[in-house]
Image (cartoon, rainbow, N blue to C red; front, top):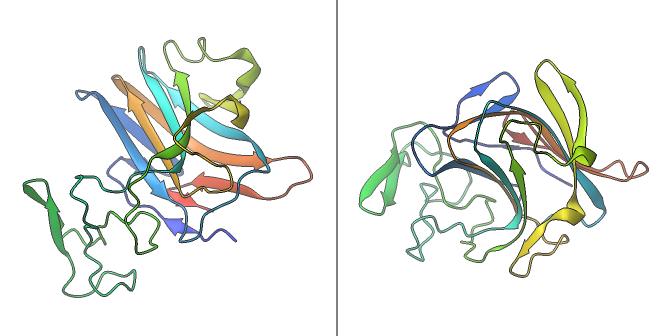
Amino acid sequence: EINEINISHDEEESGKSLYLKNKGSNWAGTIFGFSKKTLDLSRREYIEIWIKSDTKSGILNIDIGEMNEDADNDGILDTEDKDGDGKLGNDEDAGFYYYDGLVGNNNKKLDTEDLDDDGFLETGDNYFSYQLDLTNFPNNIDPQWLGRSENGFTLLSIPLSSATKTGAADWEIIKHLRLWLKGQGDVIINTLQIVGRSWDEGKVKLDNGNIE
């Protein structure tokens, strides 16, 4: 069972779309945790993503697997969730120190490095990666991945088998999804689904900031 998770991030949201905007830095992105339990996606076959981009020289990276949650590399699980109940308590919105600065205080959100809410700090990097060249999108996309277009969005069907593997990545042990844009530009993702065979009804779906 895949629990629905509300994902909080700093990118702009509008309707059912996730915006990734990068105007000045080397990259911009967001990471999602699925659930306390690992997911078995070994029976899935494709990433289906509806995407719109005006990026002229950017690369959209999609990473799926287990990822290092220790954002500041201090070996400590930084979190406001002091009582471990997964909820923001009355006295918990105090933020925590990220390198030399205090982040997340008084923002009415439960800020934590524990992306999958399992109470442990993941420090390994074991994941599958996909890169989409968005230069003059969709001209540089593999024609076999291209589907129909509607309202400026293009449907891509990316075979999971085309991934680049990092570490001991295993499709039976999936905990995180990371989306990040290298290069300047704007990307809008309407929906992203990880789907299986036609007789396999299970799927993982990113829609309106939720994992379903």
